[in-house]
Length: 112
Image (cartoon, rainbow, N blue to C red; front, side, top):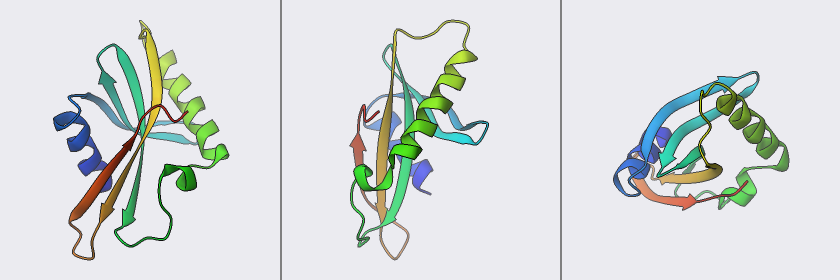
């Protein structure tokens, strides 16, 4: 549910093109691969209950997780014939209520 809401948000609100979902390489996974103009964006999605104690990507994406995201992003780039001029890692946090409906979406660009 969170990844679907994040993809919709990136596409409709930020005009990004969604290129892939759940890309796997080794033990790593990228939830969403998108294009923002000439920049390739690797997106980690964090889904939380509306009243969760943990807030923001900084508490949800550990240094170890960030290393895995970077390594998996580089694996994706290695499959491309032509690398984009730039790339970045973003985090999208989706918060939902008890009813399962999305309450808020926060976007944290270029976290890694």
